[in-house]
Amino acid sequence: MTRRPFSLLMAAILVLGFGIVACAPEAAPPTTPTTPTTPTTPTTPTTPSQPAAKVFKYVWQDISPSGAAIYIVLQELTDRIRVASGGRLDITLYPEGAITPRDETTPAVKARGIDMATNAASMDLNRMGPTMYLMGGSGTPAGPSTADLIAWIRQGDGLEVMRSVYKDWGLVLGGDPGAPELFAHSKKPLTKASDFQGLKFRTLGLWGEILAQYGASVVQIPGGELYQAVERGVIDAFELGPPSYNWPLGFQEIMDYIGVPGIQSPGYINVILMNHAAWNDLPADLQGLLVDEIQAMEYYGQLKTRKADAEAMAKFIAYGTKIFEVEEDFQRDIAAKSRAKMEQYSATDATFKMVLQHQTDFFRTWHSLAGIEPAYTLFD
Image (cartoon, rainbow, N blue to C red; front, side, top):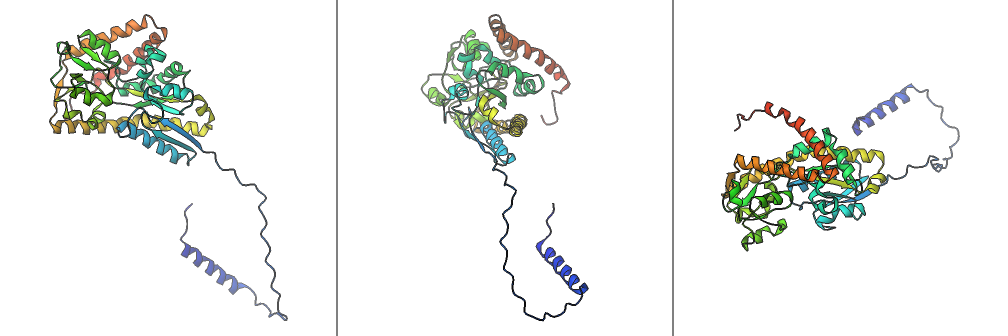
């Protein structure tokens, strides 16, 4: 309702008052002085007041450091939820390792040491088996892009598949969108398979298994230790994340080249996992708000991270970092080897086989329109 200015309200009262005085009959003067009446005490309202709305204070630990673009997306998400709920759902976000070790967030959610977490599915390989390679984590060679994974979740019933896989650990609410990763940081171009023969290369997971087939010596080192590992000669080259993640770590100071495209990790999502009891504690309206905001973030987050990656890539180039492209024959062979590994896991793991078939059916349909999009634009 629109509020009227106070001055107009007072003017209206005065006009009304003068009108009443002018129209009323003249009163006879009192014959005796009147005795002032004693003011009565206001009565206490009989209607009980509404109880204060319950505030749900939850803790959410992310997998990313506080300065990463993907972390900032989640900060903005929790701020929007706090405002939209009128303060009733107050989620505090923490960066990786702030409360529980980075690789222990899934059991921490199950035990409700934390209420929510974003984790890389690869962190759960030892707990839940190779199916985690299909849960959207970083490092699936020739796998789906970030947009593909979000489409699978929201248009291909992938969310229900993920919930069935994670059911004993928590409730999957969606995916925090990542981005295509850089193929490598190196001191020389690594464009073909033979370039990896004898190379000391840092990576993890399925890509490590495939690189070993090309003769690489695969070294597993945490991302925060890569700068020093290069300086000490422990590794010759490495891959880690998208440009906006890598630039702040200073890799441009120690490596001359960046490789593209990141076929070893074309995209990824981090699983948003919530404790079952924490979810059940929320009233229906807050559950709906949380789900809606996460779904909106999945799309907005892709825009945010893509812009940040484009800006970071420009910084690498301006610094003097040189870019090399992976040869198409090499990319094709990587895709073939990746599929062979997937078929190998399918032969011995029924859950893996089910998820792989579900994704294959969806992505073949999803990619069938790829030829409609032009390869060239006026902005190239």
